[in-house]
Length: 248
Image (tube, rainbow, N blue to C red; front, side):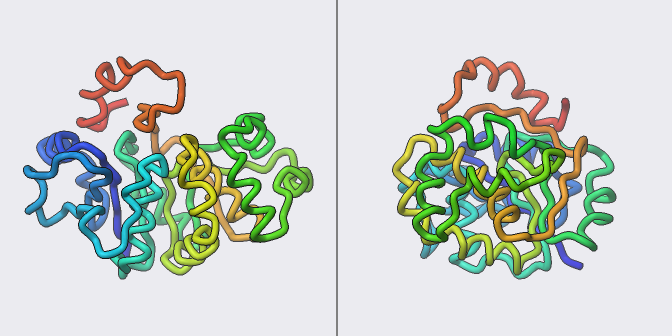
């Protein structure tokens, strides 16, 4: 079983600080995927860094899609040959037993999430700006009313939130193929990053894909890089040392 890890980052300083502090050193086959239009002069020649905007196929001109643009680059440019891929945002830390816990779950599941969330929580699809265009697109492309469909989901069902997930490569490709017809519908929204986060759980719920959520092994700082939540900018600076040194 082979696993590859992609960390999505939008600032070259963060990548350099991660490397300096051996951040994510225990994750297998680690690569940093640089997103956006920022400076890259200090990381361009690093072997473990991929510049998304320089790839043949990319959608980096739609930055509000956030880390999904990196997912698109991996898929369209066929960057992974592994059995499983970790797709992680930069603003996380992981537990010491992360790999051991993950490996036990990968045997029986095709998608792993790490941040438990209820699909019946108002903030999943109840807050219209975070889901509107995606919900309309799923209705148009797949003839599914997501609000009605979720009524059939058991009250105790737990899905995953944020874009931090692990996929087997075949399921990752199926998810991207499912999402591709909807990209044009959501890419111009200021909240498209929230939509892509929710699309992952919606994909496996709506399509009956086997998944599991593993709590307490991945912590997400939620540093609001896309600037669409009322989170003060000071949170980034106040947590930066913890972030680059894998602290909680």
